[in-house]
Image (cartoon, rainbow, N blue to C red):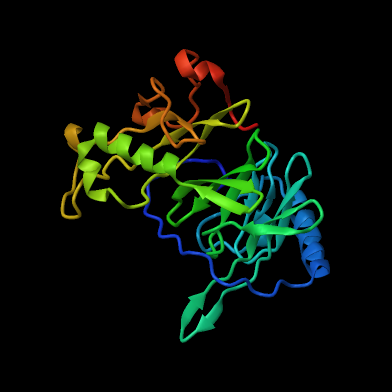
Length: 281
């Protein structure tokens, strides 16, 4: 079944490499021409853009969805402007170089300003994996669901600053600690990037993000264990509000959901959720 770019969640382990030296970009005219051709293909399809998996290299699957989500496919050149037209994400779509049989990735995903000045790379996205992006209500703040294989996506937040593009990781570390506190069997994964999830809503100023962290229900089983998951090892999805400026979980926002509530639910309207607007901006 084709994945349609929804932010359905499953937990995974992401090993994101650091930035490498930038490669020489292809001519801008070639990039624009490729993007135009892809837009024509996407517009001709009945379904919305969305990647089918980690190895998807069909450029007709990228594009802008009706809800504003920007879908990027590995090796497919594409650009997307922020709602205020002051920023632009550029995906050069180049393939990795080979070095003694190893793939070497350069920073071919980066942010430019309205005048085409390169501000900086988006660390970790130049790994030949698809991703979906949305601009937050705050100018210069970007949310990404970064595909890491097996239909698992890890959330990443980037802030565009005067000195470059900064990935904010503190909110994920706090979420992992909360998940381990609620489900101690997850403690053996501490220190790994196992926070995955998707957007449930934003505050109007883009500071607060409501999102769901979800694992497989059998995440706490050992490899040699089979059959039904015992109740004490069953991990439930968790809804929370993260303060992206500090990384902290907003008090009284942490809610454990039933397994079938991770998608298609309505946000609570009590307490800190009164400041959150459900859905994408």
